[in-house]
Amino acid sequence: MSNTIPLPKPANSQAHADTVTTGPAILPIERIKLYSDKQWEEFTLEWADGLRSRYAIVERCGGAGDMGRDIIAYPGKQNPDIWDNYQCKHYDHPLYPSDIWLELGKLVYHSFCGEFTLPREYFFIAPRGVGTTLSRLLKKPDQLREQLIENWDSHCRHKITKADEIPLEGELLEHLSSLDFSIFSHIPPLRLIDQHRMTSYHVARFGGGLPDRPDTPPPPAAPTSTELTYLRKLFDAYADHLKRDVHARLDIEQEEDLCEHYSDSRIEFYSAEALRSFSRDTLPEGSYERLQEDVYEGIRDVLRGNYADGYRRLLAVVTTAKALPLNAHALVHRLYTKDRGGICHQLANERGNVKWVR
Image (tube, one colour):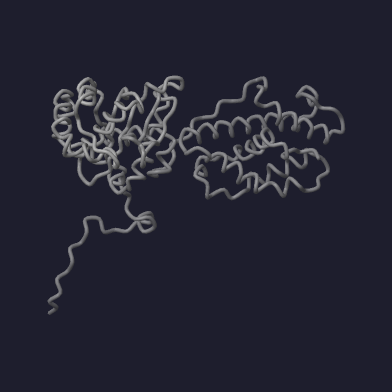
């Protein structure tokens, strides 16, 4: 009889296709605890930048010389004296009062020196939130001020600057005593994640797939100014095909195939425009432009080919675009066939070298 003791079986021991490829999913609330200080600041910057209805400008100041400011946000572009501060603290524990005295001391000292005005609001941002003691203290501004004064010598006096000792006395003490300590608070990590989910950065950072794409409305009856360039190139292609002038849809009224192609082209263009908007709402900046560049790289040799006329070149290019393998792009599962043709028209709209008639 064997003396081997069997190992306990894990609660969920069955392997699945996704877990053997990427491992079990890690929830965002757990993943943020694994970040480095730099990654935590980047996450907070993404979150604050997503509050576009609240802020006009969001900047990252973290690093040496930040004077106690990590992420600063301005509600307006014209007044730099109205701003909010998001102070990022990535520790292996919920924040204690001892974790914040130096940050408060920096703010008091540098605002006293005139480096900046006091922020409108000041938030501590930590992946494990704040502890019970600090949470209570942040709700009592006068007590917070008193405890900062008590802890100044041990936490601030020798640490605010490397060159100088900063005693809390005279005008500096008067300045500290006059400040409104109700501006200090914190944002719980679950709320950060929930609000980050509404930004264009969330899927790229945490995965989970893109949301469903809204239905694309039909094109307006009359072309808009945004369509002028690609429609002009479209009419040039029709003219080259018919061997006569074409300046508007009215000029192809008797050409059933071209009328249908014209309508399809506008539908494709607006579908691609809707995809562009969807990408801006759900993916980091530049994602859609990379998709356009992938399509351009796939059609450029076809674009250079020899054809009977510009219309035939256009058909060949769009046919190629609709067959391109774009599986590496984040939008692939939200990409319709008509988007591919629409991207060709977008390229014609935006690039002088994408034209159907040579």
